[in-house]
Image 1 (tube, rainbow, N blue to C red):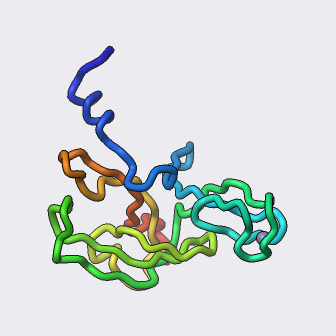
Image 2 (spheres, helix red, strand yellow):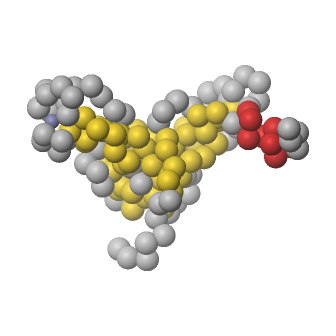
Length: 145
Ligand SMILES: [Zn+2]
């Protein structure tokens, strides 16, 4: 069994919300659900479609890779576990869902209407100092406008 510092670091990393993030060959994504009857998309997988109310029609979907910044704020009164001011805001995902998420605290990311990409990042540290990972959006490197 390996006991290197890198191995230990990976062991203590934990998601801020279990089951929220996924990763595949295209990168990080949010775990969502999509209704096979009406096409409605949700953050998280649900048993019943919240739009057409059918049961058994929701299947897991990879959502949230890209979106557009709707609005944001920068938090300067830091909760426990945070070490520097951080930004949060609403992101309108290309999948049709609006999510409240952490944002990269840079001018490029904090421009209303900015195109954003999802990454898995350390958002804060728990009471033992272990990093807690979660979704964070940063300015997209699309090259288009
Ligand atoms: Zn539906």
